[in-house]
Amino acid sequence: MKRFDRLERILAMDPDRDYESIYRLLAEYEFPWDVTKSLEMALFRTYAVPSIGRLLDRTGEFTRCPQKRYDDTVLILFEILHNGPSSAKGRAALEWLNRIHGRYRISDDDYRYTLSTFVVMPVRWIEAYGWRRLHPVEVRAITNVMRAMGEGMRISEIPETYEEFARLFDDYERDNFGRDSGGTRVAQATLDLFGSWYPKALSGAVSDAAHLLMEPHLLAAFGFPEPSARARRLAGLALKLRAGIVRMGPARPDSRPVAPEPLTYPDGYTLSDLGPESFHRHLARQGAGPDAEPRCPAAR
Image (cartoon, rainbow, N blue to C red):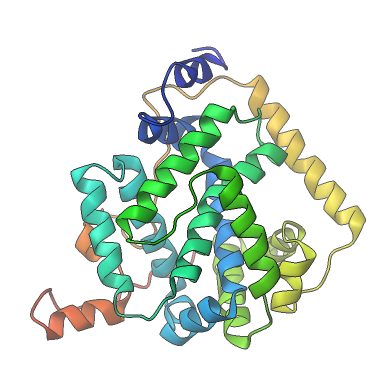
C-alpha cells in the first residue's frame, strides 16, 4: 500500500454516512500516535475547568489509582469509537459510560466542552504536527462521529459543525479556565503517571515535554512554569521532524490496526471491568455486579 492510498479510500466515502469507518481509518491507521497524544492533551484541558477538575479530584481516582483511571478512559472510548457509536457494542459502551457518569452532577455545559476537546484537539494537533493535513471530508467525519457519541451520552445542544465546536472550545476556555487546587492535583497526578511509563531518570523530562505542549492559559490554570520560547520552538521542530519521517515511511498495513495495550488488564478486559472502584462497590451493594477488587498495577 502506498502512503496516500488510504486517503484516496477515505475520499471515496461519505462523511455524513461513513463517518464511523473514516474515523477508524484515521485513529487506527493514518494518525494513531497523533490521535492518542492529542486526546492525552485534551485530558489536561478538562482539568483546567474548576468544576471538572474539582470533581475528578474529589473522586480520588486519578491520585489513588491513576493507571486504571487512564486505561478505563481509553478503553471506554475505544469500545465506542472502534465499534462505532451506532453499533451494539458501541451503544453498550455508551450506556456503561452513562451509568458511571450518572452518579455525579455534571452540567451539560461541561459535557459539551469535554466533547469539543475530542473534536478540536485531534484536528488542531494533526494540522500542526501530522504527517499530512486533514482533508475537509476527514474533519467532517471526526465531527460527525463525536456528535454521535455526544448524542449517545444524551448531551443537549451539540454543535453541528467543526467550526461551531471550535468556537465553543475557545469560548469555554476563555470564560471558564481557572486556578483550582483540585484540578492542579489531578493534572500533576496525570503527569506523574505519564512519567512512570519511562525509566525514572526520564520522568522529569516527560513533565517538561508536556509543559511545552500546553498554551500559557492552560499552564496558568495549573500554576505550571512557562517554558522558554526557544524550548517551545525546539519541541515544535522535533514533532515536525517526526512527521516528516512518518511521511516518508510506508503506510500501516490493513492487518495492523493500532489498539490500546492497557497495563491494568494484561489478560484482557470486559466492559464490566471498566469504571471507578467506587462505581463497582456501588453496583455490588445493589447486587448488580461482582464485588470490586482493586486493580492498580504497579508502574513500570
